Image 1 (tube, protein in one colour):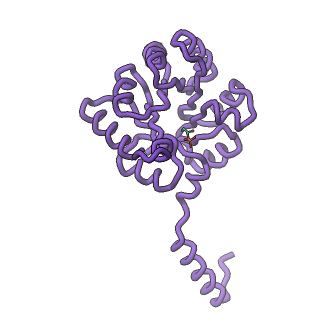
Image 2 (image 1 turned 90 degrees about the vertical axis):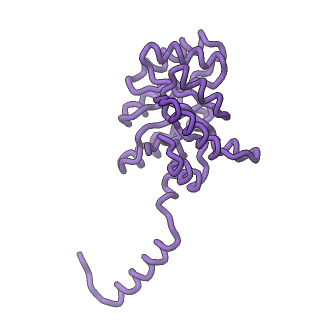
Image 3 (image 1 turned 60 degrees about the horizontal axis):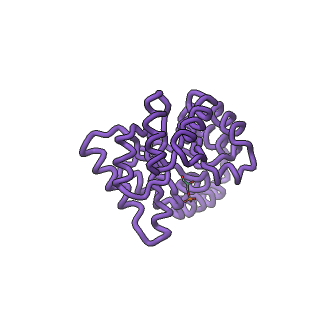
Length: 217
Ligand code: G3P
């Protein structure tokens, strides 16, 4: 499973990137706002920092304007994935931009039918939002499983990018179902390393080591 980091905070991306945990980065208008940075500048900086795809989202609502914005974003670097919303206009933009050879991430996906349309429009990535479905008492993981089945049924190459990952359980379930990629905030990725038995075991080892009176260095 590929790990994308869902943030525009460059220091946090750098920390995980140094550990080899970053296969790509996703941003959106809310994350750009949170970073307080200029979209073109911060996207360029991130794209230079990581080898994999860096998603940058268009903000126009009409296909023609999305395409123009998408071309501008794609021109920032060779590893930009243009993010377009899953609307009819977004699908038109996806078709054109992917036809021009750009990576396209179709975002705000909340149904398997939407994911099917995105694959047919040539999306590189489809981003189903797990947490936001869970927020309204629906099952985000069921959506990931449904898309996996449909894409596998027909051999679509569009990668399932599990998004709106809020918990370590989301991360586990998305991997278990076979999402190609997950994008998660750095805090969730770091939390995946935690286990109470690891902490407890380490505490015992440290106490026993102290009693030996030995040193390694
Ligand atoms: O990857 C999409 C993500 O940024 C949305 O997450 O937590 O705002 O639903 P959230």
